[in-house]
Each structure stands twice: as C-alpha cells, then as structure tokens.
Image 1: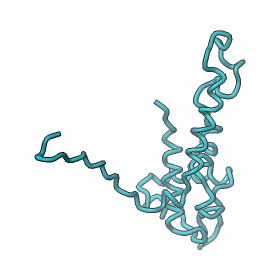
Image 2 (image 1 turned 90 degrees about the vertical axis):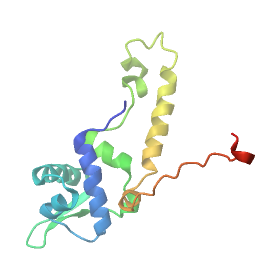
Image 3 (image 1 turned 180 degrees about the vertical axis):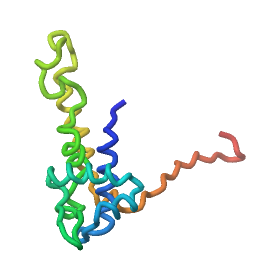
Length: 151
C-alpha cells in the first residue's frame, strides 16, 4: 500500500483549511488548530515546514499568522507531498536502474519511471482549491433494469 506520512496528511488538511479562508487571509496557528482539530504543537510544526518549502507565508505581530503563498488553484497535492516528504517515487528503482539490486534480471525496471510520472501527474491535477470545495458524494452506477424484474 502506498501511504503518505501523518504529517503530510496534516499538511494537506491545514492547507485546505487555509485555502477555504482565502489567499489573502492570515490565520494564527491557534485558529488553524481549532479549525482543523489538529493539536496546536503539530500545526506549528507542519506550518514551519510549509513556510520553509515556500507554500505558506508567515507574518508576525498582533495580526500575524499564516497564509498561502500562492493562489490555491496553483498549489498541487504533489507539491505538498514533495515539500513534506521529498520527491515521491514508488520504488527505489523508479528513477535509477542502478539503485535496484536486481536490475539486470528485472523485466519492469524500465517501466517504473513512466508509472511514477503517471502517479505524479495525477497528484499534480488536484489543487488546494479542489480540496477546499465540499466533497461531491459518489453516486453508484444504477444496475440495468430488465423487463419483468429479471436480470
């Protein structure tokens, strides 16, 4: 199973919260914690890393806090993952055949860069603006109906 770390999950939640507040709105860490349900020390830790990565800006003072560095439509999920965990790759050999101890006998090593690229593109297609919007409920496809209730 491909998993992101807990802090990355929190970063996405925090950034979606900031996106809902609007790019020009600045929120103190305490308000972000209250709005997301994430403990304030964790929010502070994540925000510090997001500031260092350039996705969030901070300001000090009585009206200080944190806000998005760019329009939420221009910040993608892959940027958040890369900022929190480093560049996403699915296997050690995804970017370098020499990194795979068994690359001489591996029949798929040449395909991992293409697979990795497809995953990265999929995550790049989702923005903070998308995540800030309410989730759309999934509608199950209706089963085809046959005459007289026979399937």
